[in-house]
Image (cartoon, rainbow, N blue to C red):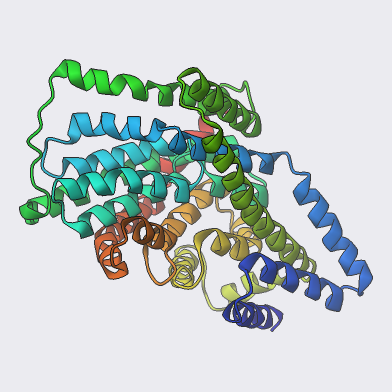
Length: 430
C-alpha cells in the first residue's frame, strides 16, 4: 500500500507542475519524517544528501557534460560529421548512415544524449535537407543516433546506475561497447531498407571526392581518437578511474581547442553555464531518488514486492518480460533518467535476489531508456529534434518509429544472448 500511495502522490505532484527532482526529494523526506520517527528520519535524509554531494564517482558527470558541450561549440563535432559524410555521403542514404556513424563516434567522447542529439541535429538535418532527403528520415535518424550516447561509453546514465547498483563503472562502460555497435549497425540497416523501399526519400549525392580529399577531411577528426584514448583508454588499462578520465578528457578538450585556435571566451562561458545547469538537474534527481530509496529500503519494500511477484508465479523470464513492459509503458510518462532513478531502488534488489548479473541488467535498463527517448509523449530526443528542425512533432515521431524496431531487436538479442554484454567486462579483474 505504501508504494502505491507514493506513486499516486508522485504522479499528482508531476501533474501539478512540480519538477521531478523536487517531487522525488519531497516524497522521500516526507516519508522519512512520517514513518521513521520525525526529526530522526530527517537526519537520515541529511546523511544521504551529504553522501551524494561527496561522491567521487558522480564527479565524473559534470566533467563529461563539459567535454561533450565543448566538443560541439568549438566545431569538433562538425569535423567528425564532415569526415563521415566524405566516406558515406555519395551513396543512397549515405548522409543518414554518416549521421549514425558520427553519432556513434561522438558518443565515445560525450556522456549526454541531449548534447549528441542537439550537436548532430544542427549539423546533419540542414545537410540532409540541402540534398532533399525526406524530412521524416532526417528527423528519425538524428533522434535515433542521439540515443546511442547513453549506451556507448562514457555514459552519464551508466554512472548513475553504477552509483545506485554499486557496480564498477569501468565494467559497465566495457559492457556497453558491443551492444552499442550492434545497435548502430541496426540503425544503419533501417536506413538502408528505408532508402531502398523509398528511393525518392534519399536522393544520391552527386558530389564525388578523391581519396586524397577524403583523407584530408578525415584528418581534422583525428582529435576524437585522441579524446577517446584520454577518456576510455586510461580507464581500461587501469591508469585512471572514470572520474579521473573525465577530468583528463575535459582538460584535453580545452587544451586542444586552445592550441587549434578554436577556443573563444563566449564558447567557454556558454559551455560552463550549460554544464552547471545540466549537472544541477541530474544531481538533484539522483539526490531525490537516493532519499526515496533510503526510505523504501528501511521499510523492506523491495523484498515485499519480490515476494508478491513470486506468489503470482513471476520468476525468471516472466518477471523480465513484465519489467520490460512496465519500463516501456512508464517511458510514455516520464523521461529516461527519471525512470531509472524512480525504479532502481525497487528493481535492483529484486534482480540481485534473483541472481541476475547487474552489469548485464544495467545495459538492458539503458536500452529500455533508449526506447523511452524515442516514443511519445515524453521522448526527450523527439522534442530536441523538433526544436532544432522547427518541424512538426508528428513528423519526428513517425520518422523515429522504424528505429524503435531496431532497439527492440537489439534488446531481444542481448536478452537471449547475455554474453554479448558480459564478455568484455569479464576480461578485467578490477
